[in-house]
Length: 130
Image (tube, rainbow, N blue to C red):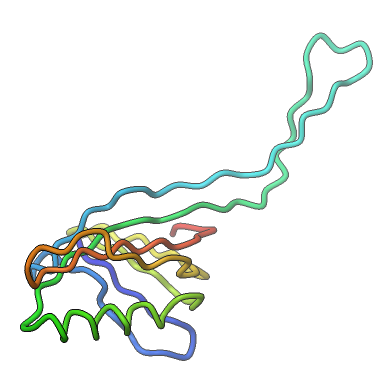
């Protein structure tokens, strides 16, 4: 799997790529919409209306090895600076591509450190997958 992030006004960044040992684990992806539930006069059951406003999350963890501890820390600092960025997130697995336009990077966390290998969890707010 490969994850590429292009923030509005910025350049393409590869956040994870299994083909180059930038290991990735897709933890969660999905969405929900707003629903209105109304009790109608003399109805046997409530009426349910979809109101749109679809939103969801895409969460994945990516591991990358570094030459030194200082390089690993500088890498995380640069990733942390991407927070609140809006843009396009593209996940690719073989011939299948998911494009999430208008994604927003909402969290960047170091979840594990093993020697010089840092595991970073990325959390994106998403609205559409095409």
